Structures are given as structure tokens and as C-alpha cells.
Image (cartoon, rainbow, N blue to C red; front, side, top):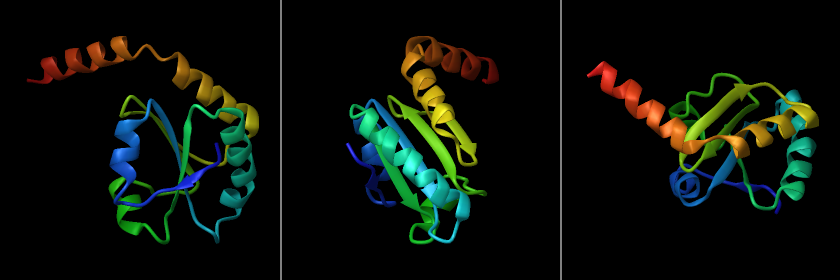
Length: 123
């Protein structure tokens, strides 16, 4: 699968309707974004079961603001609709592979139990 461009209107449905979604927040004027683009595209072909999405922060300023993007590129990873990774900076191929492996290996049952447990302590 190749990367897909997403907007404010289809962001939430794409995140909610897919098991794993990676989102690259980028801009055309950004040098590190242009360096990361071929790495991200290559990973999308290597992992066809994962949705690789891109958000142009210039065209989608409201979405970038809602996502708390303060530096680009920023990579976010969602698993079962939950944000599990967010980090600014252009990753090398090995770094991106490491993120993908970590996201695949997450125990979402343990993660959701831990989140519910922490939320119960705040009440």
C-alpha cells in the first residue's frame, strides 16, 4: 500500500476503522520532511497491512493544531484507535521499522487495563 493523504474530515474515521495507522505530519517547505518522505513511502510498501497516512500541515492547519503538532515532521502511531506513539523528527529506516515493530507488539489489553486503572485513581 502507498501512503494516503488525509484531512480533518477523514482523520478520525481512518484512525478508528483500522488496526494500525501511522500518520506523518509534514509540509512541502520542510527539508527534514522531504528527507523522511521516501523512507515513509518505502515502509508503506513493506507493510501493506498498515495504513500510512500523511497530513499536509499547511493545508490542514486546524488538524495539525488539534493534534498538538509543534514541530515537523511528526510521526504518530495509532493502534486500535489509540495514540501509542508521537515523536517529532525524521526517523531513519531502521528507526521507523523499530516503531512499527513496537506498535505491532503492543499488548492492547494490558494498555487499556492500565489506562483504566490510572483513570480510576484520578477520580
